[in-house]
Length: 412
Image 1: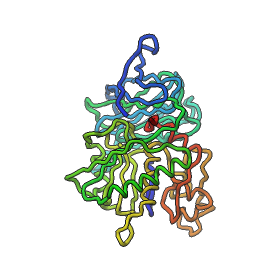
Image 2: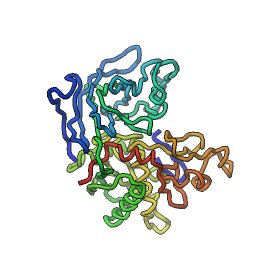
Image 3: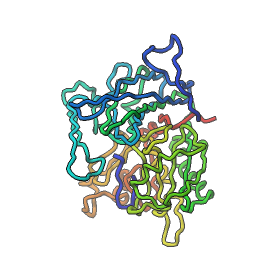
Image 4: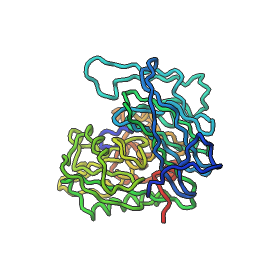
């Protein structure tokens, strides 16, 4: 999420599946993807109620990851139910394990927001999990239950994937019913950087022209390309009719989940609104960190607020809108804010500067602005809030996550 006053980090074609004889473990499904390309697989999940845990736990799902993998993501989709990866191993090595010390305690007193129904506690001490691959709410994933929860490798240089059988067990803190799939996206090594396909869905009445969109996309392409990041591939334009062009933030998940006829499998959704009712200063909002790839879920894609990018004369600041889109795409593909508003929380990359509130909060208001942090990460694309100058810097570590994301495909 990116705003002038407040920013909170949340936080192709379908190639199907196959199981070539003699190449893979019979118990481990393979994602059909050519070398130097990407592929998707959708596998069923079955759930069993665990009364001791107070949640539903899935049977393990096993997927073969090729040896030349560059990036892989898995999304647990159980409709409106909040899910999370309970444990994941790759080639027998622990990626994440939230099973030990996990307590999900329901709060049922009165009407509460969905995200406060459960408290989650995980103690990473003495679990035998290697440093860098702990449980929930810890680096590098900061994974927690959410609708269409996604786990991605890599999130930084120390979490790059390797080949082997990826074994995933999920947990649902709401009743998943009979619904449940594991959506797997894999990118295999290629010589080129790759491109991002975008499906741009403009809410009717949002007042964005094709020429303005072209300028905005030009900004995104320039920001990424100047750092050897992914380029833009196929961009499609859609108009969504019959909905409020100024939705509330709580309505965005429903809009993201609307099936789009002609949607390209693997393309990232961009939802363009005239404004956000109740949150007019929010520039944009990603569906997740990272968000689902190659799927249509309530957490798919990013949303943009055109109103927050207009001046008093209604002129659209296409440069700022382009940076916002590049920023929110960064979240969707796995990038955190370099520095959060409080100046005490930072991203998981070793090569991004950070802005400590104790050193750089000149006006002593308890937050750090882009202007206060201009000598540090204030010009970074992923700084928590917009500034009065270009914010188009990216570190090699950040770019590495972008180019390895299965959202990118090999360019023609």
